[in-house]
Image (cartoon, rainbow, N blue to C red):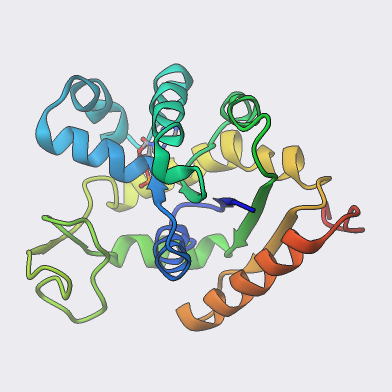
Amino acid sequence: MALNLIMLGPPGAGKGTQAERFARTRGIPKISTGDILREAVHTGTDLGQRAKAVMDRGELVSDDIMIGVVEERLNRDDARSGFVLDGFPRTVPQAVALDRMLDGRDPLIVVDIRVPERELVRRLASRMICADCGANGAPGEIVCSHCGGQLVQRADDNVAVVLERLRIYNRQTKPLVDFYCTRSTFRSINGAQGTDSVAADLAAAIEAAGSSNGNLPGACA
Ligand code: AMP
């Protein structure tokens, strides 16, 4: 059975880090819409040119564009045996479109990573990523431990844009919890812990969601 997983949660919750790690251990692709867009901006494609200003303001790229990008990506062969989606869906119309794309495929497992807002602002304002490969830098590192590239702050990680991204998350993306929480394959985990503890909780949540066949009482609380 294919493992089709989406990670929900606010910016800075650790979705990217956990998605990367989980996808690597399971040998399935991690599909990050933020990474796809940053790569497009970097190489100056049509998509990148259309997305750059919107991303720099911390706003969302249009549903039509994002749905097209993800649909094309999920139809590639390597996503047939499963995938981890990071950063998509971010709006209810994107979630509705994803259900349509996955019609006839194995069930979607949804994990929501919860982190208090104070902690998110602290994490985002100090986050560094590699200018070459996009990996997150560890605290105190100057160069990327994966490729030796230079660590820089993401263009949208300054405090003003971080606050705007959190505002947009609360308005447009948080409603996805209500969209998914009645499903038996929905779980939420505590993201305000060390990376290894979150990874362990994530693996357990996915295991439980994959073998469940009834609604989880209280998941919508
Ligand atoms: P992320 O790396 O997931 O934080 O995404 C960085 C930025 O890319 C976001 O602030 C949005 O501007 C844009 N973006 C990424 N994914 C989506 C999406 N699913 N829908 C709309 N915009 C997106």
